[in-house]
Image (cartoon, rainbow, N blue to C red; front, side, top):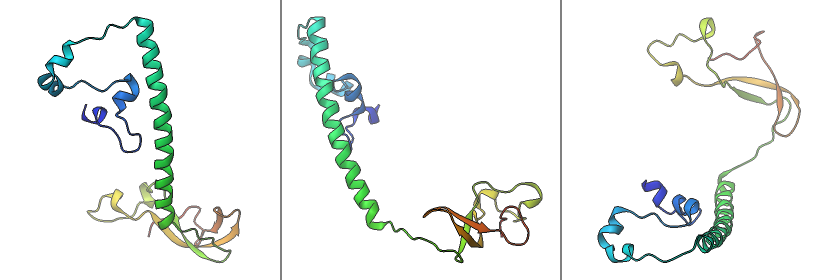
Length: 149
């Protein structure tokens, strides 16, 4: 409930307000503002729907603008620390293992859990550059797949 009622920095609105078009009424509001809660505005169904539609349309437009500014800020922060490096044929690289080997290929590590073992194998030699981010590597020792060391 706290997450749904709190306005987010990237949107400027709470998720509840974005979904319903109004702020969430919390028990605290009822304790300290009992007079305002009892006053009801007389709306027809058509008038309520028109007001809700206009409010949501304005809220979504503001949110889209706010989200795009937030995304630009996050991108510029990422770009400050990111570096792109192109590799060449003949360079040595490490190969990332997405899944841990099982059975005979699994390393005997004593008391360590398998999830704490390194996920990188290598170094392996780059034999072909397929694109700026895709490379073909030569697996040594006749293995079909890299193994953990």
